[in-house]
Length: 516
Image 1: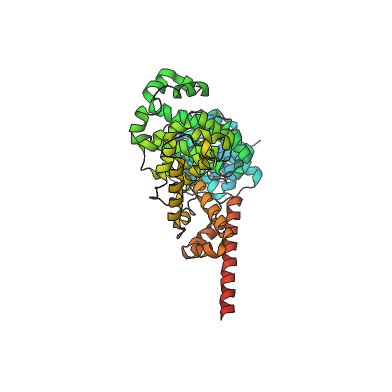
Image 2 (image 1 turned 90 degrees about the vertical axis):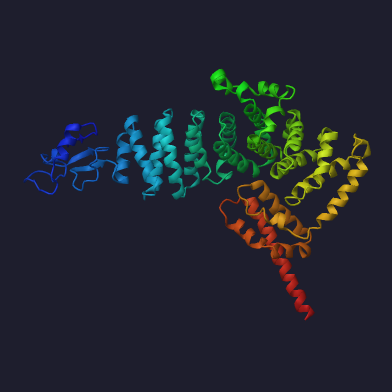
């Protein structure tokens, strides 16, 4: 059996002896190995394994061993991971070295590196330090590998498992979320859809920093925009709406209700029922929450989630109303009248509610109708806010005079203003719609824009196709067709618009030929 030798960094004698060696003077004797490490020149045959990770000699050219665990090359790091797999402290040092390799793009074996990271994270699921290091390496490795479905699911499972076990570790959660963002969402997460949503909702409750919340909301946004109503209904069953409201409230009352020093882990396990009771307290929503601009991001998060999960799902719309959602709407409307992005998100959700006949009576409140009425004139950021407000009022009017329960504004006043407002739009330009086409980070807005173009160019291509061409929409639609972030539904809608434009252009050319 061949001799196995391991020189550790703590071996000070060996290190001191090595520092005293003159590598330029050959002391090779007949029958002995050629070695740049003085202490190993007595060997007659090479070692099977030499562990020199962290000893500062891994870069030596003449190392008398068949395999070497060190930090000089990627191969040495792989061997070190394999050899120290069940020695957590040493393994962590190796992973930190591996992280530097992948962070600074010094790797050429990304697929092999991926397999080692999966192995490491599965071997030590409860060691948070190893999980953080492994997930950080995965983030960089995933940029350079093209995985099939099975292997994508393997990586996703490792990341989700790590988040489940270490959901209270911010760095761990952030690493995993950033890694998940590199997959095709929601397609790659459909097999773990409910599991992923459940984890993300827990994370959203857990952490208050803006960066973590932005990443989580981006994932929720992307997942919710392109799934069926049935899946959104299932998500509603996970209390997504309640979590969004509790999250904003908890931040506003942080010193009273969200102090970990006072409540410890009980904050994390607080039930939705108790959170809902908090919201029923008089003045709980307005108060300190709305007077500070630092909470605007919480509102953006909450309204984005509510709009996505209430879309096309009457049950979730009803849940939103039951949780005093329209009171939240009115508070936001009065406190942030200039926040067009917030107003746009809110009216998008209210538009979904207005499409449910049985829920429309609950919108028939003088405060809410007055707000919709006022927003008809909001054209400061395109027609989207005005358009959605008009849609809500149109649905309320459609229920007939008997259903109109308020005196100011009257049904006749609203009807007259609605017609006047729609006349001012005239659709002389698609700029408000076309500018939304490249917004992959705002998938709901992008999807709405492509759908609107597909609808308009299908209904009257001769009238609307020229606008798409003249205002640069064709190239933006082609970009959507080729972009890997586009879903199949989005590409299909883009195809419809481009086909309509092509057909309209051909018809124009035929007409000109006939005229000549």
